[in-house]
Amino acid sequence: MIIRPPREPKIVSWLLVVLWSAFIFYTITAALDIRDKVDGEYGKNFVKYFVMGMAAVGAVWSVIIIVVNRARYNWFNYVALTALLGLYVYSVNYIYKSPEHSRWESMHFVQYGVLAVFMFRAVAQSLHDWGAFVVALVLTIIHGAIDETVQWAHVDRYWDFGDLVLNGYSATLALLMIGLGLKPAYFSGLTRKSSSVALSSLSLFLIYLGMCCANTAAWTPWFGNYFPSVAEGSALDGPMAEYGYLYEDEDINVVFKSRLNPKELEIADEKRGAEAARICPSQKSQTLNPNAYKQFLLDYNPSNDPWLHELRVHLYSRDKNEQRVREQIAEPKDDYPDKVASMIHEDRILQKYYPTFYEAYNLALDPGFAEEVKGKMREGTYHSRVSRNLITHTNLEEILIWIGSLLLLCMVTNIITGLWGKPTFVDPDAIA
Image (tube, rainbow, N blue to C red; front, side, top):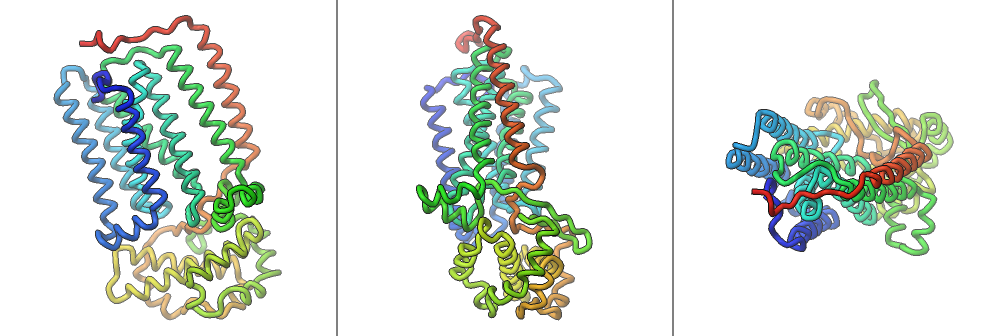
C-alpha cells in the first residue's frame, strides 16, 4: 500500500481521504456528546487504550512491511522507523497526560496521523517524487485549519493554534515514517510540477492562516450581521484569534493567561472588585446553573468586558471542581487529584489577582475543606484552562509581517523553479 505505486483509481484514494475527513469533522462537531457517552459507558481510560491501540496497529503494520520487504532496507531505515515510532507513541502518551491538553486531544493527534497517510496515498497518484510528502503535509495542515474553524463556529468550542501545531506535528511524524523508514520504491528526485504544487498549497495555507489570525474581536459585529450563530459563539468563547499575556506565578505555582496585563488587572480589581461581587451569583447553586452561567458570559463577553468575563470563568472553574471533589471524596476517581488541584489553584488565582473582589464576595472556598483534601492534590505546576486559547508570545502585526514575507518567498521560489525546464517523471508501471 505504501512502498508500491497506487493501483486503485484516483477517486478511491481521494474517497478514503473524504471519508476519514468526515469522521474527524463528526467527532469535533459532536465532541461533547461523544465525550459524555464514552466516559459514561466505557470510563475515562477508554481514550488512552484507544489511541495507544491505534498507535500499536500502525507500528505492527510498519514492521510487517519492513519484514516482507527487508531486502530493500538498510540500517538507516530501521533506525529511522524505530526512532520515529517511539517518538510518536511518546507524543501520544505525553499529550494524554499533559495538564496543558485534554486527553481527547491525543485522539485528535492520532486521527491526523492517519489522515496524513491517506492524503499521501491520494497525492502520490499524481506526484511520484519527494514533493508528494510536502504537498500531503500542507494539505493535511490546511484540513486542520478548517477543522479548527468549524470547531470555533460551535458554541463552547475554541479555535486553538496549539491544536493546529499538534495536527501538523502528527502528520509530519507519520510522513517521515513513510519517507525515511518505509522508503517508497517509486519516488525520484524533486520535479518542477511537485514543487509548484507544494508552493501553491503552502501559499494557500498562509493566506488562510493570516485571515484566521486577523479574525479578532473587531470582526464580531460583522458576524452578528451575517452569521448570528457564529457571532454568539464568538461573544461567548472569544473571537478566533485573541492576544494577551502569560502569567507564570511561582509563588502560588500556577500558569494562566489573561487578556489584561498585570497593571490592568490590578486597576480593574481596585475599581470594580466590589461591584463584581454584587453582580456575581450570591448562592452556590446559582454559580453552577448552566443557563445562568451561559447568559452571564454572553452579557459580559471577551469583547465588551474581558476582565469580568475571565473572573467569572475562574470562579466557575473553582466551584465546579469543588462540587466534583465533594462528590468523589468517598470514592475518588482517576481524575480526583486534578479536580482538587483545579479547585485549590483557581481559588489562589482569585485571591491574588482579584483581592478586592475576593474580600467582598461572600462565597469563598471553605478553608477547612481545602486543607482536608489538599494532600490528595496533583503535584506540579497548575496550568489553568481559563483563556488558554490566547496568543501570548507575539502580536497580530508581527504575524502578518511573517506571513507576508513567507508568501513573497513562495512566489519568488515558484518563479525560480519554473526555470528548471521540463519536469521528468517516474513511470510507476516500469517499476518491478
